[in-house]
Image (tube, rainbow, N blue to C red; front, top):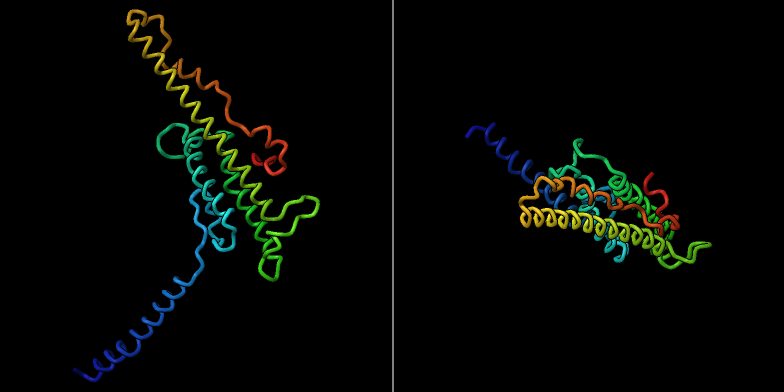
Length: 222
């Protein structure tokens, strides 16, 4: 082994390897000790918020809204039923409302609560215990009211979709029963497509009248 080779080996053993070990160890410790962040597929804007910075009740509601929001995006966004939401789908008012709720209104409400929480220089209890002036509710209660309003609206949309699709199944069954019970009456029957169109007359789900009275949900379509 030449002197140059020996120096190179020494550099690797006593220079590069220790430095690499220190760097990897630092990254590992930093990753382990870093606070766990929120992770919601339907609301990625909340991904910068540490889980510990929100009350348990708030995180529970956000979990429910995230799950329902994912389903609703597919139901009302994938209008041509091809398994994906793209330019081929028809943009509906309901889909825009769902997107606005998840992309703008919910993240904004959470950010407002966190600002109230951070105003307290001690343990952040003010947002959970101090009533907001002229309201009778705390910052935490105000946020829960917003999330409960959204959760109820999502339940209404899921129910509306269930009944609308159910009516399509009933129409299909009536058509098939008529066809097989009276095979000679085929020329006088309405096509299945016409029967299905009747079910589309079901009122499209919109904001409930309760939301119109609730200032929290007045602007969700904007």
